[in-house]
Image (cartoon, rainbow, N blue to C red):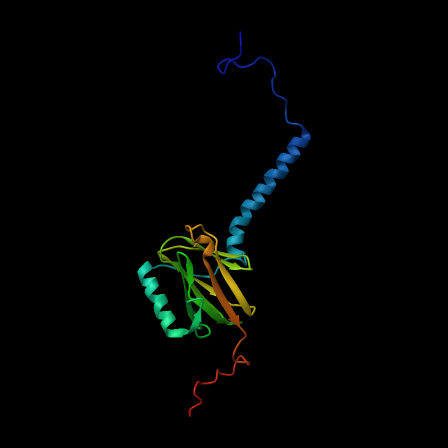
Length: 195
Ligand code: CUA
């Protein structure tokens, strides 16, 4: 009679696990449990977690907010894109769209800003180059990140979420300038000097 699933094979067809197999299984299981426990730990204690707000926003309303932001604080243009220098510590707005990041942001070093990210068409990926900082930029959601630029310089925002034929061209810019007021407590000089 041949063996089928209905009639089991005769005799002891399996071998009990060897001691070393049990050891390795135990090590793997314990490691799984450690990684499992680290998931909530990372969430609660991880320094890499973004701090900020999340809110729903209508894409058109976001586009209007960005236009207002540009109108309020534009200082020039760079490759036909507006360059915006918002007041230190304010809310700054970045709009992802096919295939640009609008506007170019000029921020001051060592000052905390709330960086709002949203898209007006489809999913984009905010990747701050050369740092490994990545965020999803999703239409309908305003993602407000508390960020403090720690280094002066020119930084690129690369889209890392495929968004169509112009995806590879979707590069934005953040310029970080040294703090304008030298002392933390000295107020910025008033424009015009009262003349
Ligand atoms: Cu935007 Cu890829």
